[in-house]
Length: 257
Length: 312
Image 1: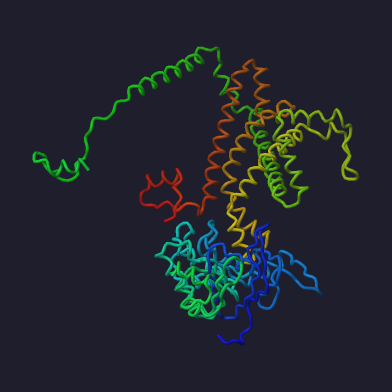
Image 2 (image 1 turned 60 degrees about the horizontal axis):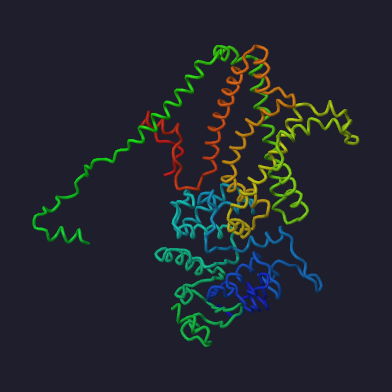
């Protein structure tokens, strides 16, 4: 990663609270184009919430959040912010893929229908073309033979790989992963990480909330350790994971490594 | 533990030569015979009583396909379908209103449901029927103007009474269905860039249907039976025709039997329809759908053919 690559995600003092509970207390960070950016931290540290702010599933209360140079969820006119309409938000989300901890596949659609749904419904791709592309993507995640299966007929690992294919079908410029392997049996984690590793190699910009330190060390370009709604430590994953500077990071890593 | 020790240490015990099928004396259930006998006796008494009654059984087949009866069956079905349509459309509307973030629409929906669910449908029918006592005309400005009595026909009374009442029940069923769909589904759909309307239409409603259809089927069957109330507002449905024939031909009870038989036939047919609609919306909810009775039948009769709808 060269330092000159432009910022895909830029956060400046991002705050988020749910009622009286402050979850994010001023997050500043920058995800460069083409890098794999890992977010680690204890549960409740706000890392998933921050991820959800990036595609405006959560509204931020203060600060500024940019994706590819554009404000998320707002338009600036003069010195006033205007909320974007639902349709405008949807338009921006097309380019941001998201993979959830609980997969969230559409249970009433088969694997290939799950992958085809957004291209057909949102981009207006003809069904035949969408089907061919969906089959290619399922091939890529190693599930071409499961195309006709419903999610309930697939294992967790298979469902998560279909979910990745579904997100890729919109040709996103940024992929968000919200603890993609946390709900999986240990045996199945490897297959999903393989797909993500492959995706990273292809140059996709990825923001990954994870507990897989091995993955972060091997594939990550940057790593941020969050706790209590703030960034505690940031840097190269190999450095932070092997030689953390902050006491809080040391304490966390000693428990999970 | 003690059993194990006995087995290994006891010199007289021959080691078991592999698993042997257990042949134990089954527990007897004498009370089952007694209760069966009592139930059969009671059933027999009822049948005997009716057989002894002064019932002109021949009148039932005589009038079974009478033109008036057939017209009544048709009117009953028509009324059921139209009232349910009003109920379903109104119910969806009310459910969306109740779930909306607008406090005014949501309160109005709440009030509507509270009122129509809280008053008997027969009372509502009579209110619609007798509104002519308080309104002389109906005046919709330039669109429509007429005497109330010629506007409010028995059909319209019946439709309004049954349909608007049904909407209140359907609203709760639809609301439960929409709420039953996991929030992650909406999020996933939004994250893919699908609009609010597309998310509702393509993702949420198809999944809500699995929760909505079974109680709606019950509502249809209930509605079919409830339509018999409209005889009270002079609407000639199956029940009203049967009643009229019964009084004229002097076979009142026989004609009630006849009506009951027709209602049973219709509700049975509706149950079959409901079974297949539920199957359709159960796609993907379980690993494989059980075969339908017809598939089971054809699989037994024609063993070479595989049932089509069974997922592998």
